[in-house]
Image (cartoon, rainbow, N blue to C red; front, side):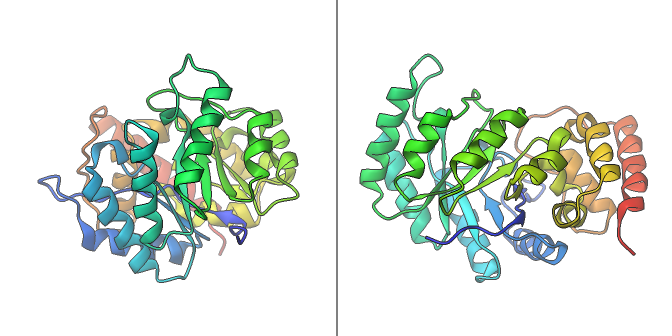
Length: 295
């Protein structure tokens, strides 16, 4: 199993037509847009992709389109665990892997309820692994429907299988990020941080890169930051985090539109409205962000 590359791996948006059907033509353009901006990989069918609002068939078609359009230029990872039992999750994960992704992402909050123990979680993942032989995988600490963090003992057990290669961290805790990095040093494994308040410190500690919503506003700046992190852009990310979470992912689509990318504002997820006041703040964000682009 190869190690995923160091740098920015965007959590991909899903473009929709005005009737809320998936806009596959724009999805192909979006793949090219991320790669041209400097993305070293793509995370398809994730929370930013509105994965919970897609049918199983749409999830597979979205992933297939991303793999096809990417054509091996960068690795693709995609979520594969949604169903109500381990056997169904494994079956769908195998279908995802057969589409040509480099790793299947498992949602740790889909294996157990919030009240169940790590031992129950580990038992479920082991069963999933038995039913998905040879499939490389990653873990996403997805905050929906509830956030479940991966403990270091669990991470160490899964790393020892040789199949865990990616971890999207949402702990918001630099000490936990550092511990996970340390645990994975002997393996083909990378931690990709989602929390931009400590992004520079996380990269300095050895994170493989960033997988964050901010990259759906300014993918080129996130790729640039991963390669050359600066205190100035770190401050910008921290100061604007709340704004970029407002009416997301509609807000990200608006900012992409304003930069000339042909994506509609349509989203299936119910989010706060994109008011004129919020648009004005996002326009100011665009102006501020332009200062950080390398000449």
